[in-house]
Length: 124
Image 1 (cartoon, rainbow, N blue to C red):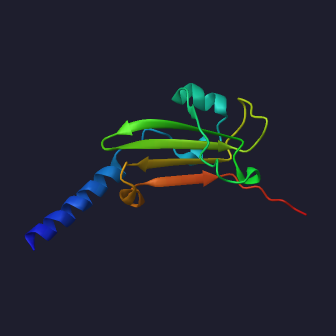
Image 2 (cartoon, one colour):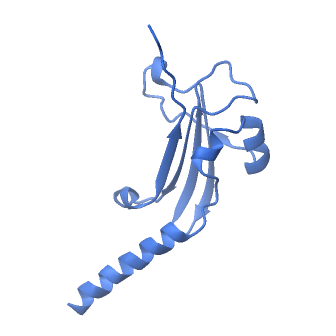
């Protein structure tokens, strides 16, 4: 019984540390209101990548960038997606997410991740 209680206590304390530790990136909600140029100036040069390469072209982002910061046994990832083409430095993001990821996929569902998106309404 003591071992089980110790394991549960360790898990709870670990979760409290992960959730209370300051994040290295701004909230995705705040990122949506800033142009790419300002984000690159504040956060440094991002990495271009294509997370949706298997999706059909109408569903793909016009441009996706990410910033990565190492964390103990994991990494923080701030991903920003732009749908407007052609892309320009004054473009505002259409979606942003900030997630803590580990190399152990089974653990990722326990870690914090938040995402915000800009909605568009199409009227026929």
